[in-house]
Length: 103
Image (tube, rainbow, N blue to C red; front, side, top):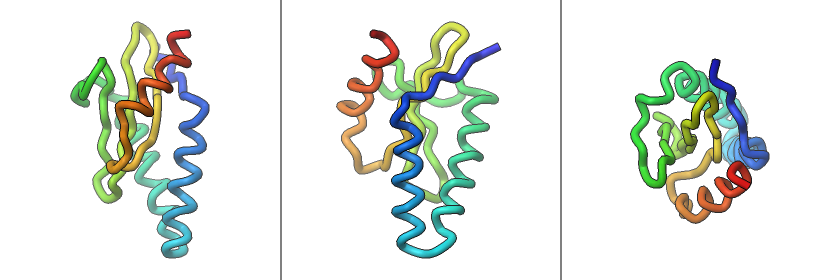
């Protein structure tokens, strides 16, 4: 069985994105959260279908929103590193977050 370890900031990533969309239009944040759950569950079912982008980090892109889940597959674990907007400097952010799991 594979265990999912989530970086503590993933919850903040989700909360911030939810509020950003909810501020744009009531209900849009809920739609974003639903898409998050859809892709999170897909990632858990078949994590290896997502391509490695750099340094063993894989990316699960959302369909409707410009966001992606970034994760690493380890023996018996998936490290969920971040939920990030496409315009962010993902390599710097993910390098910093990966150190938490390795250290």
